[in-house]
Length: 187
View (cartoon, rainbow, N blue to C red):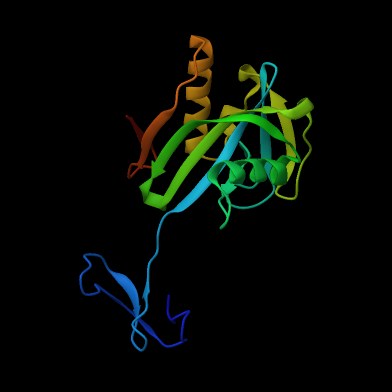
């Protein structure tokens, strides 16, 4: 950040009085520009014994598969955001949504929230951000072509719970290691 969004003057990267972190602070109007984690929300859309995957038409990870998910917007609830993202990416409607997992991903300043829900009438088609959509069983999931580690973790937990016959709410931290591997701590 170079300039203040309030007055247009230059900002400095300093620790403001009474704070303990570096922040962008306007040198003119003293506005502190806080930068906080982004919230990503999405849904495991279930239809019979299948789930809905979307093939990404955008970067990052263009051409790889994911669950429908994206950044929350202002003035919507987390669950509304998950439903909106599912509608935008897969032209799909979800009902009976319930929280499934929450993952903190500190190295990219994101918090992921994923819901489970029922895909209305089993209907989906690619939205603007998707090249393709597919309803797949567990053995049809293209595990080597999943876009994000958090989606892998979500799907693994989903199928573990499904096999046990009981869905739980999962909480964890996804920690990136120096060699592009990840550790997941569950609580």
